[in-house]
Each structure stands twice: as structure tokens, then as C-alpha cells.
Image (cartoon, rainbow over all chains, first blue to last red; front, side, top):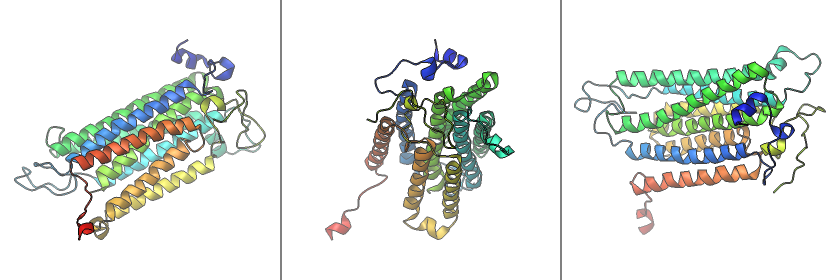
Length: 231
Length: 130
């Protein structure tokens, strides 16, 4: 049975049975950690390329300093918009919180609610709510990025303008593509949750999606500091 | 390597009931944090982010030599907080720790080596010579 079919029918864990492994660990989780390790190296190469070519652009716009003719056609301020990016960083951090709450909700789904549980306790147990919140916050982050890219293009910075443009769009574009893949993954889990409900037996599948999502978050933590804040 | 009963179900954080989460397959060695801890971590991450952005707008701090190192340290603290608490590396099987840490070390060493190679960072030996 394929992974998708297995997930669709809720047959996993010891009850539905993946075969025992030599480590006792689920192969999917080991594979995701190995994948995350390889992704560390991918982003390390992109970040180092950005840092190596930082401040080597002959033509503007520049990230942290104003640009005046003849480096630019017209005088332009520093192009990075720190308040907007700070807001998008906060959004991504909160999406990580929502993701970990989604996993906790799936893991504890078969536990009875305490007597007199309020709306907040019920909300904490709702995997649908937290999966939706994570996907929503991820989408908001992507909208921030689309706004940033569009405004840069309007201000004369494209991937072909200068070294800063090439390395910046490549690095943040790769990250944005990863966020997009993560949002699609979350929406798939949300659809399955609506169709048949995700329970503790599905925790491993939500866990590996969560690992990927948190990795996307930690990569942004590094990018925010190295690209946006350090001048 | 820790040994687990493959059919063991770890008690949930909230009391006597148990879940059907396969803790062994998921590599969970210690009980994961509660919701309260996750919220505290979120507040901590937000606070560091605010300090980082606040530092960006202080010209004297930006022009000091401590600016970049302080931001990198704050960023590293955020990075490892997410990895330890949200990705549960602090609580899960050591094989996951080895897979991630090994790759991360290679990645960081690669970045530093390339920055040295292309002259973006250098070790100043003049002070030692004089």
C-alpha cells in the first residue's frame, strides 16, 4: 500500500503495522531528518553565496545604503523594508507555534476532555483549527514575500539587476518555494482531517510535516539576521 | 541506545489517560512539553526578535563591532530553541540529533570556510606580531 493510500485509510503505527525496523524508529521520520540535514547544506550554500557577494554590487539599488546617480538612474533609499520583514518573521514564528499545537492536538485526540472544559481547552484539542492556522500564517508569510518582491521590482531591483538582486532573489525565492510546499502539505493534512479525522495513529505523519515546517522557520531565522539585519 | 517496549504507550501530560501514539516509532525518549511550554517558547522567540529589530535602529549599536556578533548570537539562540523545543530534538532519539547536528556542523563549517576563502572574514595577526 502506498504512503498516500496508507494515510488515507489510517493504517499505520503498530496497530496497522509498519514492519519492525532495526532501529525501532519509523523510517519516514529518519528520512525526514536526513532530508532536513541535506537541506541545511543547500541553504548553507545559498547563504554563503549571498554573503560572499554582499557589498560587491557596482550598480544599485543596495540593501542597506542609499543609491545615487550614476549607480542608480535616480536617487533611491536602501531597499530592504525592515518593518515589513519583521512582521513577516513574527508571522512565521507564530506559525511554528500553531504547528506544534496541531501536533499536540492530534496526539491527544483520544483523551477525554476534562470536566467543565472551556472553549479554550476545546480549541487546544482541535487539530483542524491549528492545521488551518499554520497554513493560513504560512500563506500570509508568502503574501508578505510577494509584496516585497513586487515592490523591489517596481524600485528597479530584479534578479538580473546586480549581484545583490541575483543572490537575494535566489536565496529568499528558494525559501519561499519551501514555504509553498509546506503550505500544500499542511492543506493535504487538513483535507484528510476533515475527511476522516486525524488521530494519535496519524501522529507520525503530522510530526514529519511539523519537522519540515519548523525547519523552514529556522532557516528564515538565519536569513532574517544575515540578510536583513546585519549591514 | 535506549530500549523501548514497542507496545508501550506513554501516559499523556494531563493525567492518567493514555494515548495511542506510537512513541517508539516516533523516537520519543522523553515526554514532549505541554502546551504551556510551547506558549512560553513563543513569547521568548518573539521577545528576542523584538530585541534584534530594536538593535537595528540604534545607530551607535549598529556602528559598534559588537553589532553583528550580538545579532548572530541572538539568532543562534532562536534557532536552537525552535530545534530543541518545537522540533523536539531535546526529547527525541539520539539518531535524529546525530543526523541533524552532523549536517549542521558541515553546513556551518562550509559557510565559514567559503567566507575565509573569498576574504569576507580574516584573522588579524598584526597585534600578535607587535
